[in-house]
Length: 193
Image: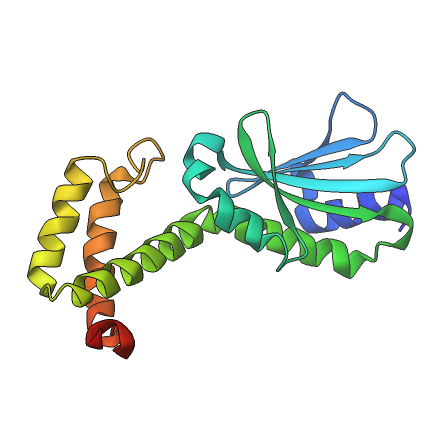
């Protein structure tokens, strides 16, 4: 891909939403759904396409899951200036238009889903651990829900309040607890032991 191919691909995809930035070799795409940056290195050999996802304060509780996700996709997560970004990085000379457009679609998906998938995964993982421990102690679903409510109220369930997910966290814990309770059983050796 040449520099002109890049500009043509961006304009074909986004039309008048593409604007040249004040810095050389940088473009911004701003639509109602998306703010995207396309930046070339000083040597014009490498392209980075970036989209801001959420402030780092919201992403902080999920950093382990976010870093694990970097191994599973073409676009990656990065942190810069207190923001979690979705990033696509590629050598310009070997980049094909289809690859660029696919990466832009993936970045758009990252922006749309935000950190919700990590929130949901974290809640499910922790709820599975809680259910297993509760069943080992002979607790009922109702008493386990009461314990979670108490732990949440006392701040023992992590710092979900500052992440922006505080309002949804307790409801998510309870929904997951009800959904997963019937399918999780402690290991036989632990109950016979």
